[in-house]
Image (cartoon, rainbow, N blue to C red; front, side, top):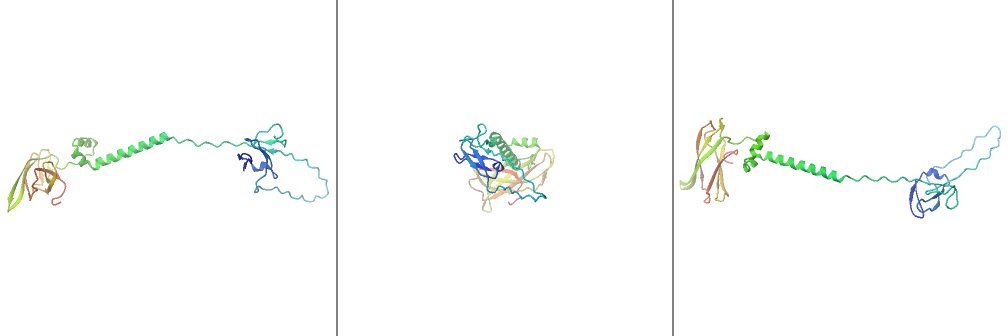
Length: 253
């Protein structure tokens, strides 16, 4: 049970059975105040049962007076309390254990490490799934992909587009842009011919118009060259530059 000093409100923990049925005097270890502490109301009471009648009456021996001592929450002097009462008993209160301080430094370090792992993982995933865009912007990175064994197949590998020319003509009263060019297989194996993408740009390389076309020849043998021609009706008047590249997109998309 918890008892409280009525003078300074200091609280102590003690065994209620040490108070006895009538209570006893205790003393505060902090302010030395002494008071009569009664047991709690719910503490079990001692019940004396009447003895069974004996065959012959026998005089009961005189009971020795019970020695009473007062429990105390403070230090005692000799065999009596500070107020001259019976001997007091000190109640020992164990100190409360302190909570261990969290290791903030280690927690922060683990959090930063996990964050770096997540960032590196996201960067690696982006580099893999957007490999074509990365290689298009930084061609030297293809060697890194090949060293890691994750390089994606290059569209039109070993095929070289060259000798691109274009001229504006009028056909059936309509302006038409006529484009000529060549494709050469510089590799050692036959290559399937992909579709081609023609893009018109301004002098500042701003996009104006593009279209997808295919050539009749579906593959090129090693060392073989094929020419192509494609046209675009009503080309933009600001078109100054023309680019022809390979594409995976179908014709008409």
